[in-house]
Amino acid sequence: MSEILHVENLNFSWGENHVLKDACFSIGSNQIVAILGINGAGKSTLLKCINKILNPSSGEIYLTGNDVKNYNLAQLATKVSYVPQSVMTSFSMDVFDVVLLGRRPHLTWRISDKDRDLVSETLRYLGLEDFAFRRFDQLSGGERQRVIIAKAIAQDPSLILMDEPTSDLDLKNQIEVMKRMKEIVSDKDQSRSALIAIHDINIAARYADRILLLHEGKIIADGTPSDVLTEQNIAQVFGVTSSVIEKTKYKPLRVIIEDAIEN
Image (tube, rainbow, N blue to C red; front, side, top):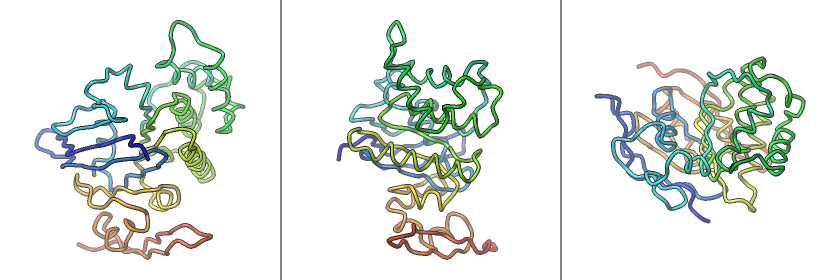
């Protein structure tokens, strides 16, 4: 299995606040890796360091074997796409053209039929074909989020970074989006992976191949959902008691939150 991402001893600070502390992990091809942790644990910061939105204090990040420091932003955009936690921009353009922006890093002097076909296929795959010629700025928050996810997929990167991609979606679309992501990443004809910061433990347990458990800036556990999502780890990171129902042939691992732990 080829390596898509390697992070070594990554540190990041806001002034005196040490947000990331010696983060180390690797992601191979065809993997969905979820990052779990409480608000402020450093999940978004980690994604932004990988995508060069933020500059780490120290450490190394390698993408498909190359140091990201050697990529300019245009080059990096051919390798990495990013879905932010919230979509602040209200593009006054059709949805089709917003998703077509994902092709920009690959364009030369004109838009090809291949680019248009890829956008059409992506919209259809995510069930957004009826939105193609609607104005992006007239969509709901959840609809905009799905369009930005489509844009990231149409970008055709090696690594898709997603920051709480299901937070604005209803339950059905949370499941549909994660199912589609699982299918896209699992395609053995492509060398592609996804790193997803997410707050829903059970969504992560169901769709992630691996989970990074981030606590006070440190990765305290890295492994399969069954290895990482233990009652002890959940109590330490989230401050709650829980029951973990093990994965079976027919059902994914499930976590039932019971009560807050009193300090």
